[in-house]
Image (cartoon, one colour):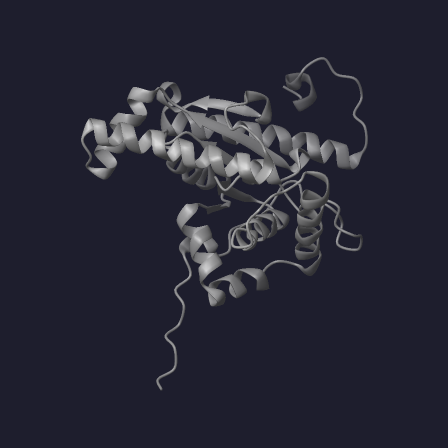
Length: 250
């Protein structure tokens, strides 16, 4: 039998520079992820995946979208290659976070979904990642997560999917409705959460108004702001300040 052909690893999984807030020191137990994660929740057709990829470009981070996560769950070799780059303490944190979610947040995941959830937690434990969907923002600690909901008017979302999938307007409208319903049902069954609740997010971004580039830049600013506060928290309490510009020295 010929040897198996080498596994092609998606570009997003190849090394990217990491910087900024780094989490716990290497000599102590990991109590939170090693860096920040951007979790993108999105309405169907709001171009959330495009925005996530643009955010990853801006931050020089790795992006894990629907296709990449499914690929990793299904391909043992690719997943092993990713895990080999994750420090042992980060993997241990992911396992502890999964136990915490099951114990304290009544995580109700089907057995076939648990590997996906564990993967999301492991990716986030390493830090400096942009994760699209998969309830990532609801699974991760808010202190180290920039959780963003990308929205757009229904007509704009229908028009986008009609063009992207070459559907008629009625077909695209049904696709938008079905995708939103599936995502909401998954979140409700898994964590009893409602994606339409704006208080679950750091920011809600209207892609129709800002466009892909503007939305990505806005999210990038939110990440840099959260990084700054995390670094300040690590170095000790700051002196009193009146606003963000004063703190940043502007």
